[in-house]
Length: 56
Image 1 (spheres, rainbow, N blue to C red):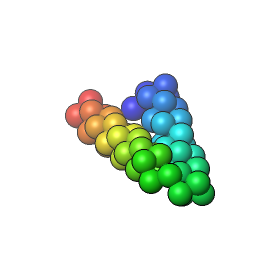
Image 2 (cartoon, one colour):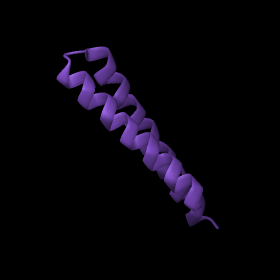
Image 3 (cartoon, rainbow, N blue to C red):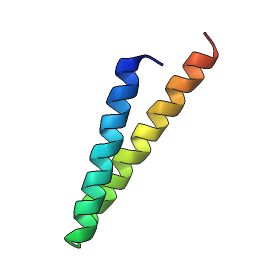
Image 4 (cartoon, one colour):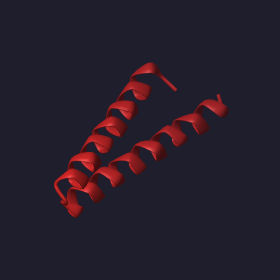
């Protein structure tokens, strides 16, 4: 996994955590769910990159 991909995925994960926290604090379930979805997407991207690295 390249350093750029790692950084991008980590930024997406942190943004998702922030959205989730803001959504929880403001009782905005849509924003909270969006943050959780963003985190899940980031985790899937990270897993895909690890699989790619395993076959190199």
